[in-house]
Image 1: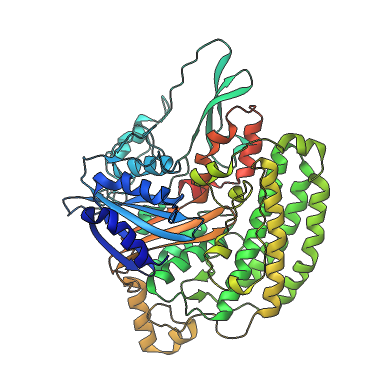
Image 2: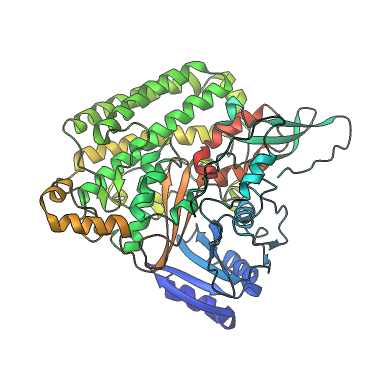
Length: 176
Length: 398
């Protein structure tokens, strides 16, 4: 199935909800409103002509200047039909997105990581907690407004976790 | 963050494996809830090696990030270079124009990397289960491969040899002779490993029927590479979504249906033989020609030109400082790495740096399927499942 046919198939069912679509380097990417995300994913997963049964990865991209700040990106693959496509959706900072764990279990850790790094919450996620960062960390490191070298208050976190009685070493001052 | 477990009766107990445990292959902390010796529930905890590589990538030019990919899966650094370089080439639209010699060199390096990585897996997996000798045998052959890598690029662990547009330099004299020697020798050595393990009764007891995952679950849990092929999923990116010159080479994709630790062991053992086959064909087929693409807007100038030509130096300066001009758009490229599919998702806004770079790490996804595999098994099985999944924490935590 070519990318055009694939897009026509999605459009015939979800035409009203598609925000934009694009084909770049032979990869189709479709941006859909987040209310219909799980429904579209279920359709892509279950339709016998498509069978997108493998979630390759999922992540987010941050655009701080936009009102709907985050792009969520799902790269999905059909193993029986050897196809790959990208589904995207948009969300605001404090609006949760529906989880796709019920469709692909591999979204479990991917969504946890997205929550950890961007602070996007997911509805119906079985176990949403931080994964790579420490549990009491404040802030979301992969957001664009999070500085590369960390925030000054991150030092407080380190001090808090030093063993009792250990001398706090002076840290060199941060570059502005 | 810790998952809280409620202990219902006095038989149940919660224990903690790692993060500093010799059999966790890095820093994996594994919290297990046991009923006697049976595992009721478990929770792998990762992130101890988190270095924020994805964040660093946003502040670096495409070329600058290349050495960082070595530090992902440091046992198969060449394959990481390859996957990253191919992803950037796809973004630039030059992936079809890579010179054929460079493609063959890349295949040789990738397959050597696969053998080297599988050898470390076999060595440590066997050591975890208690077979000490295999460790020494495997590291003997791995030394051969590292010597070859050292010949080609001067390094033994982190290479930065495969660059955007080709490879850093052509193969040195004597490399192909050394490679042919290795290719002739390796199948015999592989037989030695088989005699040590494949029909060993202790090995069979520890691996057969352990860590089972079905075909449907393997796909649904997203696990990749040899682990899925051990569950009967006939999928290999080299064959099914081909890249480089893999379509011109003959190789089989080993698939076993049992879905247990032993099946995953057999898959990797067969894969090493197939990689050897690919190497044999590469030795015959490798053409002569340039090892780097002729696209000065994307590729750094050769050193000789920099020293002799003023204009080349100026252009080089701009490329190093501002980065190469990539078109705006987003791409995903996944390559079949020894551990599974390593993918790079790049979102570019048309600048010299990626706006967002996401690494799809096979180790990360494979560990997420561990609770499914060990549930209902014995506590000692965790160690053999960890070995069979073959993960590296540089890649998992990024």
